[in-house]
Amino acid sequence: MQTVISKDGTAIAFECSGQGPALILVDGSLIYRAFDQEGAKLARLLSDDFTVYRYDRRGRGESGDTEPYAVAREVEDIEALISEAGGSAVLCGLSSGAVLAMEAALTFPDKATKLAMYEPPLSDDVAARQAWKDYTANLRQALEAGRDGDAVALFMMLTGAREDQVEGMRGTPMWATFEAVAPTLAYDHIAILREEASVPTVRAARVAVPTLLMSGSASFPFMPITATALAEAIPNAQHHVLEGQTHEVEAEALAPVLVEFFRN
Image (cartoon, rainbow, N blue to C red; front, side, top):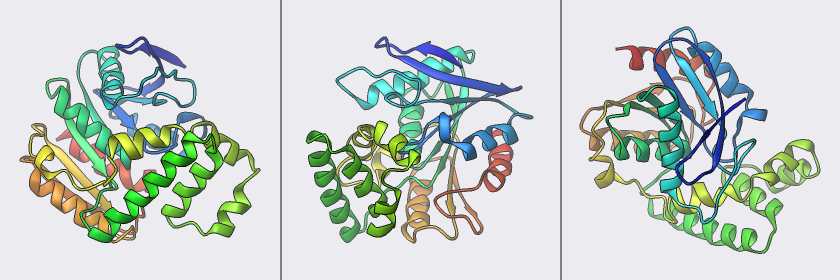
């Protein structure tokens, strides 16, 4: 494990493997290196072509955290990793991490030279936006009251888990792992995705680097709609559908698509 120091003094833990141009993986909600086996597998599959950087986003795993939180600070974390990598890198963001990676590409397009986004969880559907606003209001209440487990439960039920399934997970080692990083749900879902989680087509139109939007054919129905909307908004973008993949994309399906896009 290595660390870089971000602009605000926060230590960001990372590991790198492989050889070739730098590729930084930006995780989505709750994920960090210690229990992300699929992320480790993806890094291995990419390491023949790239020097792959996996890192713990601030507030997770072995990385530090500094209050008050701001999306700009997480963008600076990515910039610090790019500097560590030699001054330029391609970015691959997954789920809410895709939106964060897009913010980084907007902020320093001379350093983040290509962008891949897998299923940013955004939607312009009126009912979906209202459901998201209700969820973030409840999430804020749970976190402010120190009910981290309830915050995790809210997120899991939002993504399709039944209440009995969630209750069955409470008390397991995995649940404790999620609870430890529950406060970062506010980073992703209130700050990065915003409280409506609508598709930011106007902002996306400012992305200047070549961009790949990806969605899974077996995922939530709104995901390809969102990916298409963003691909149409970003000037130099394309949309690729991964057959049979859900929101929990498999490394074996994702890796060859990333290699083809980043190498060409």
